[in-house]
Amino acid sequence: MKGNAEDGRRRGARPSRVVVVGAGIAGLAAAWRLRAELGAEAQITVCDAASVPGGKVRTVEVAGRRFDVGAEAVLARRPEAVTLIREVGLGDDLVHPTSASSAIRALGRTVPMPKGTMMGIPASAEAVADVLSQDGVEAVAAEAGGPPLSLPDHDVSLGGLLRSRFGDEVVDRLVDPLLGGVYAGGADGLGLRATLPAVAAAVDAGATSLTEAVARTLPERPSSAPVFATLRGGLGDLVDRLVESGAVELRLGQPVRELVRRPSGGWRLRTGAAALSHAPADAELDADAVVLAVPPPAASRLLATVAPDAASAYAEMELASMAVVALALPPGTELPPSSGILIGERERRADGTRFTAKAFTFSARKWEHHNRPGEPVLIRGSVGRFGEVSTLQASDDELVERVRRDLAELTGITASPVDTYVMRWGGGLPQYSVGHLDRVARIERAVAGLDGLAVAGAALHGVGLPACVATGDAAARRVVGQ
Image (cartoon, rainbow, N blue to C red; front, side, top):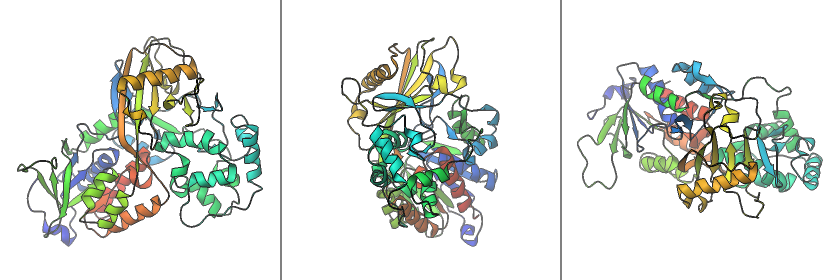
């Protein structure tokens, strides 16, 4: 692929050679859209430092079964991911959760997740009467009668706002456990507008309290449409299909270490470990267009000379690490009736020590295709919060044992697993802190001035798969001139 980029690109021609940096779901979605837009003749190369494609989508074998140890579901009510799944021919493999609902550990009790809340923020005191203390319930009831709420145009700390309106309990017992599952971060470090734009919009539209804003945002009638979906064979099937159907040249284990603008137009990328004293002949790629779909540290490094303001904005983004501990329990192990349990950071075990896990997903309850009589019972434990380093320094075996102790404490299940799998996601989740929207705007303004370059990924407009797919699709359309 090394060679001169076509000068026709500068004359408005559609690109014939495109390099996508990053083989996560955003990058693969971009490559898929590029193939659809540019046709079979275009050369589309996808580079990634990892040895396997998919990014935070990873399906492995646990007890002989395909099991997701990264993202395990897509938000079905947002269309991008489900639409892509159907486009690649996997629509018949879409499945939805069972009717089992989730639970939360609050005040030392495991109780059903309260309805009438949005990301744990209550629409009324009645909605959280079974989760909070009497003082906490009274604080929620009083919020509507407090000083009328108004928001500045800029973002504000979600945790700071909630604590000022409700006190600490709503944050510690409800909001943080839910945010921990999405961002691996707590409310105090996240921005309201960045994480809950619908609630902010309701306040901007005239709601004078948070309870009123949430009530306005919640649907009047519960929808019968499923909220989530996944693939029967694991979301890794989507990764495989995108690679195959996109007909891309996939270069794994090849990090892109430099991106430069060519004087004659187009881009040159240098690949390989930065420590190499010499570059092999095939370590350079020339392209008419480039899509960067990599985590913030890599994006910052690659944009440092071509878009310094974008690089600076990426460098300001913080990341959280986490791990998924998959347990295959003996056949016949009885699980609780819920689909899973969320655990707040301030919750304690009976002996006063902290829980290692922040959540459990009882996959055999949540998904019908994992509920197979006579076969091992699959569950997931999630570990790791933003700023929490020591927990993830434990060995895999120690993580498994700690998660098992938490499981026994919460459910009474002490059965030894027949198989385990630990998947670590170092720096896997960007934090949407106060100022995140401004940083994204800086990135997009800087990149917009560069012909044939676009960015995508979880650090921009949402960490869920539909949001990542949307950024990949938009990046592909940008570089083909739409």
